[in-house]
Length: 411
Image (tube, rainbow, N blue to C red; front, top):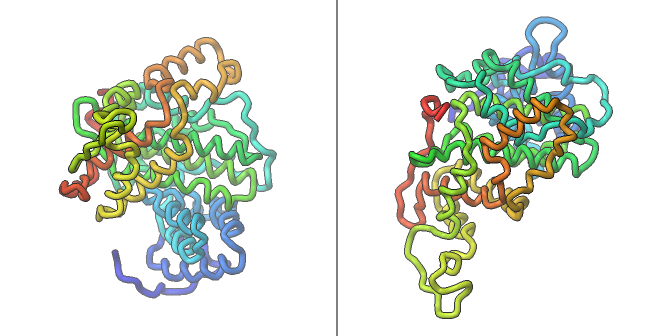
């Protein structure tokens, strides 16, 4: 936390592009966006100052690249505006937009053809891959092996410079219906699963303790704000732009942490014991308790309850955000049964050759996509709590992991 101070000058509509990336102008941008939000509201501010072509590509000199700044800093400007959108707090949205303006930009994140300057026709799901299939392809792509030498302070820049064209190739396979609430919900669900898998299943290393990677955790927590931010995105073209850029950011950070390879079969086999067991003093169900007095289910019928008790008393401010996201996804998708992913994209809808189809099916099989069921979120929440400590039950606080997965890329 740094002390607040007055900026050297004011920000106006005439000069707001002039000082982007300059942290000395945070307070000036904050006052500017407060005024704009009171006049225009969040939806119009996002359209004009984040999603528009003018907010990202200048006529001369350095591009303002506001959407890239929105996704930078481990996605913190996005998260901050997301809280403002979710809870209707214009002041928090103003803080997030000011953070956006003074963060650095990764120009490689932006693709001009994603920025139609007028409202486009809705993008319909046609010949397409779903986001889970795309993740499986990224996991198995030999061009993305042995990633190393990535600095935490410039992860996006370095990854996009090395692998940006490959990431773009995959992201542009993903199409979705942005013209309806159900289409948006489907796209958000796919990204929610993808980022939960990257963080939770990627961190489950069969021969080691769970790695609760601090940076990949932000992919999980940021995804929670997609519905609130999309609800404040009015143009079809901006919805598409927003989702493509967010997916690009997620894959870039995934690669930037060493591309841990999710093994869903190993994950489910290795976490079955976590579903109804928590540490601390046990209880002794009375005779006749269902399903039987000796059952773990009788002792802990709803594991989310002790998890939430621990979140309330745990001092780590990121743990509550991660567990909140996982609990929310469990409430939405927790009843998904094994095999539900078969309905995401029929083979005949992918528009590819038999060889391409075989490659995709091989990638899905290697990652174990068909194993997915709704218990994933509880399993990841338990692994996370075990790693950071059940302080309510007397365990010491433990930290997030920061060292990445660079030595385990092909494990």
